[in-house]
Amino acid sequence: MTATTAQPEAAVPTTGRTYEVKTYGCQMNVHDSERLTGLLEDAGYVAFDKQGAPAGEQADVVVFNTCAVRENADNKLYGNLSHLAPIKAARPGMQIAVGGCLAQKDRATITDRAPYVDVVFGTHNIGSLPVLLERARVAEEAQVEILESLDVFPSTLPTKRESAYAAWVSISVGCNNTCTFCIVPALRGKEKDRRPGDILAEIRALVAEGVSEVTLLGQNVNAYGVEFGDRQAFSKLLRACGDIEGLERVRFTSPHPAEFTDDVIEAMAETPNVMPSLHMPLQSGSDKVLKDMRRSYRSTKYLGIIERVRAAIPEAAITTDIIVGFPGETEEDFAETLRVVAESRFSSAFTFQYSKRPGTPAATLPDQVPPEVVKDRYGRLVDLVNEIAWTENKKMVGRTLELMVAEGEGRKDAETLRLSGRAPDNRLVHFVAPQEEVRPGDMVTVEVTYAAPHHLVADRVVSVRRTRSGDAWEARTRAPKPTGVGLGMPSVGVPAPLPDAPACR
Image 1: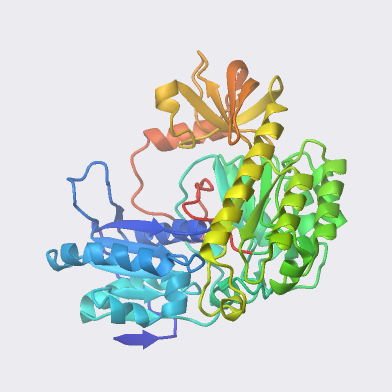
Image 2 (image 1 turned 45 degrees about the vertical axis):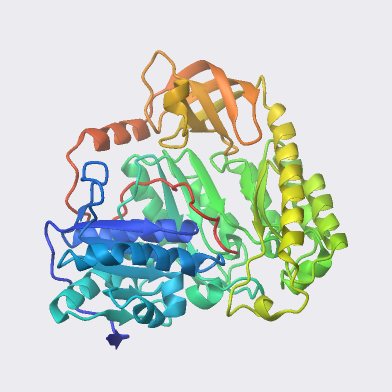
């Protein structure tokens, strides 16, 4: 096995070999997988057609982009690897690569447990993948390359995005916080910020290709600017996005309550294309638990931010993350979480049972909560979250909303003869298909007629607005599949649905 730290030489193109990238975890990993896909196609690989392939057939190269946040992350990876082992043994030339947070954490352990893996790469050197695959093929031995710090900002890498109307745009990577439950800072490193001009140039390039919605992405997105000493850099960036012609919607994820300042609220309220939606992790409503988590805010501050956001943006929908069963959490602590949830009136919440992760301070804390207690509390929390979300959604019945038509978000659309879209506040709306043709990226105005806890339904379409994004989607759908992407030039894409969890923060 070979371990290296230097940047490798240019990859040897491997024209015609097929690839598949399997993604686990947060938005960071989803966007990294878009870059991995771009790198592979730039090197001559071709996307594996799962639907057109015979049952059981696999791509020539299978890449796992892993997550290390959940407790079962290791089991999920090694289970999938063991499934591929006999297939690989019967197919000379097939390659398996493992990257992402779990690869950064476990390093050489992966090839010890799964010696048939060809390449292991970390979070700081995803650009090395094509060369490492070629080295492994020529040398006929595993290649392991884990860098300790970021060498090239990922946004400079070729990127193949998944849709023509919305895109992730990274503004920073890494995190300077030390939350006791989170292993991500150890795997992603300290925060590194992109220069505003580079970010805005990427957004303008995306808009020129048809994108009309961007989501600014950072592990701790509202801390943006810490590296170059500008505490108002994030609010300035939001306002600058408002000056980009053709950019209709701007979102961001995920801010940290400790760094949420009033200038950001003002920028959200005063910049027309910044959408009235906010995902702000709570994690716990108990001040004692927040202290144990090393979350540098308390419930009063959190509720104060929500109050000020709603005063400035009355239509804002606020969502959150909550962990149940953190070590030492008492019934009184849990009751505080329920209180804050009731006061916050979240439109939805990602709720998690605490997951012990080796390497985090929380893993060794005393008073680990028994699993049966965690499960009971989790169930009560979910019931309250759903009750509030349903009540809040019922208030939307009768309202007229402009939706951006989405692709792949309505799992039952074919059965119900409906289409799906996102409202400005990011609520998911399933709407009756109008007589006029609409495409993903087009805008429709609808009247909401029904509310469920996790979606709305609209049986009346008021109007349809065809857009450049719809044109771009149509052009991409009808055009022959490209064989590669240009180095450093972002193509269009969509923030994909998350398989496991939102970004860790």
